[in-house]
Length: 437
Image 1 (tube, rainbow, N blue to C red):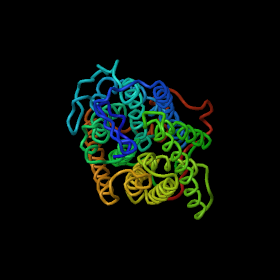
Image 2: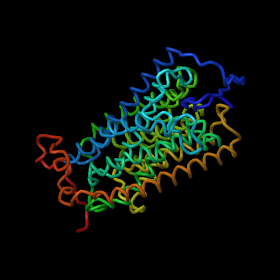
Image 3: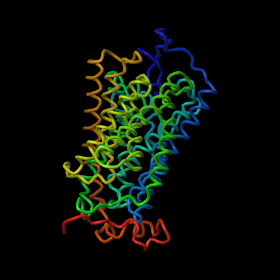
């Protein structure tokens, strides 16, 4: 097997490089260059969540911008603590089985002197914490402007421990059953984007649509904020994908390069599709590049630069089509989380299997595609069904939705006793009714 993406597992590794297998019992050695790169990468991935807050915040109404951004911001605090307490151990705890890690590393116990590859295991744990944080934050885009903040926090905590962490174990731990089956997911196409996308869609179904949907158009209140957020996401995504090599090496270099190329191709594809129906938009450019980032994530170190163009363009075309068909689903996924992250995540995961041969990775195409389909199906079922159950459990404890009056007027004041803009009385960002009564 070629250089595996699963170096992130803290368990002993077997890496084949240049056709020569390194001994499994070779003594690991700390590499300060790799460690420095991973510290920077972890910081870059952390920046992605505030970037997402800006991206999502600009897309909502002015009177709900703070609540929208707070759902991303609170994910940092919530998941940061839960990852330390149990999330890391569930995902990567030594001595686990095919479905869940052991509890040997609860409280991050036992990581102080350990190495994962050539970096401290403590750095690896921090890097993986950033992944878990943004995975939860992504879901919020489907439920903004109508879900109670407390309900989101409770659901988010349960989702992190019971949905995300086990799925990360399946795919990225050497004990995980999808890892053993040969599933390829370099940086989180299934673990993060597909799971967050399907969970977001389920949450939209459970909560029900916004008042007036689909007759009323909730237009983005601050498009420059959307562009700024998208730019920060792209910047941070370099650490997200290239950092998943866990070393400053050729694999990281390829992942970095394809993470530049695929979003560029996706942006142009999205703008081209928009232009065929009207005018190219700034929101479309931002959305296209994010979709390209999602699509290339599982494939970034497995495909050649020219194949990255295919991945980005295909991901954008599929997500664009999904956005156009959004209303037929009957779910009000407010910011199109499933269309952009779920659909593009599926496309990226499948194209990873179809195109991994371009760099000599994986099994024969047909066999690898079957494995990728299995990983996609397993992730959809696990995250989708699990999220439905968790939301129903939360609804027993507290209402999921805010009152109608707060939804119409905006949630910022009622949820946080704050407002995003001093002059909110101008009506900026109020819903625009486009037909019907």
